[in-house]
Image (cartoon, rainbow, N blue to C red; front, side, top):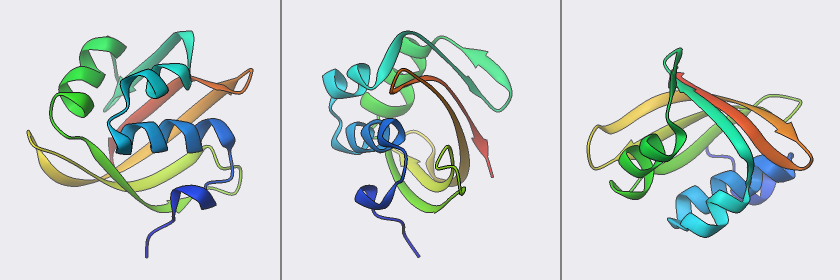
Length: 107
């Protein structure tokens, strides 16, 4: 079962996933706070380098399977041209209507 982007309950998370799936760098950046941070498998990464490598430079795409009741946690099938498809978990921190941090890793 897939959760459609329009059914994601948190507006900031919805904007993040929509921009990621559209490959829309400007909209993706606009969904983040200027000082946003992230981690991958428990290790903090450089946000700009990671998103270029894992999302925009390799056709990254998320198919959301479930969301937590607060809308800030997702389980999704994430795929890109580098790693193929994997089941991933995502946890978001939102500040001022934008994502200030996200943590992802294999689910």
